[in-house]
Image (tube, rainbow, N blue to C red; front, side):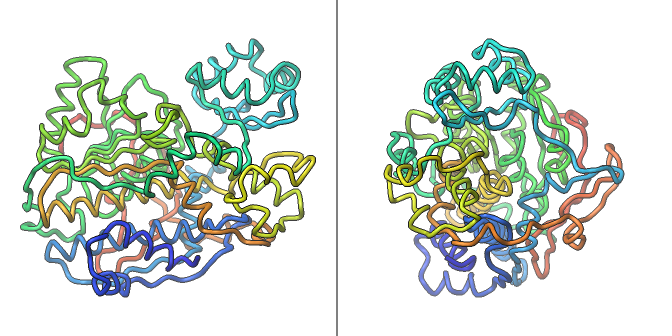
Length: 496
């Protein structure tokens, strides 16, 4: 599948009632350059990047046109899209080297039965919980020894999940397909945009701005990558994005810098009645409510999408989670890398790497089922993930795309809307795009080869170099109107 094929697929999924002529007219305004492989991977990561970023750019351009703005062309090239998908890798402050984002205990460990399990320990409470389950010290060598001598892979995977911690057994595509959770994900579309209430808000189309999302107010209750990328995309198309974090919740500083561009930042502790009341007040003047907590977590505080639609008719709610809102894992904690491990993506990359970066498509076809893992006595010596956090970034762009499509629907037919995406649904889409027999043999991309993809800005953190916006809009270029700021810099209120 080419990047254009993938983009057409996204556009048609989001506009199921449009005519073929309308689809063709919209897609004819998009220029796409490049193709896979752009990074060393057997998966079509460039196609995923170009399609998801291109869809968001096209949605912004079409929404601007709906508001009375001029028509315009949208451009995306695979090279710049892949740079955006690695934005946290290239971030630097005051000329310093890029940041290390991982705790030493985050990574892959071989188990007693010869399997591999991935631990995610970047937050202190996750790390300490893992160490309690293992009963060992904090050094990586201690963790490795304990797992290798005392734990079988499946048993440790289940024990950590039951403790509410972050880990994933490296499964084959066939093992994943046999799980009830994989079948639940397979029953869902790539994303959902559903009407959840009434509401008529044509005001945005009555006051067109210089930028596509000018005047759109977004509450961004997200952390780490996927959700913050979605809010950042809405910001670089002109939305007023107010990031709201809990003051007690952990963050990762480089991601705050990279994904905070274009946003204001406030804190509210939803455990406190007064702070919940403040968030409700913000909701009543919001257009988009973006959140990345596990399904049901915010509902327990009174912020379920249906409740928000009653409180603020016409709101667009966007929900992002790891393993989807459906199935037995719907409340399981997860991150991009863990979903890669659980769903067979890491296994596929690892087997390809063990065979010189070359595999026939039949060897990595997830539809081959459980027989895949029987082809090799010892399929690989060490796990290999995707060359970027592709599920995070693609899910973020898909969330922003869905939000803009929902805003357009609200303008045209009214209603309150709920957009749902997940890392697992995005991962399934990536696997469906097919594989590249020699994809891992392309050379690695160096930061010095991407100098034209970076921009610099002065921020409270220092002089930040980061990846610039990847989509090119002919008349309303995407850009960040404000620098990133530390968490809690701003008051929890809308700008005047």
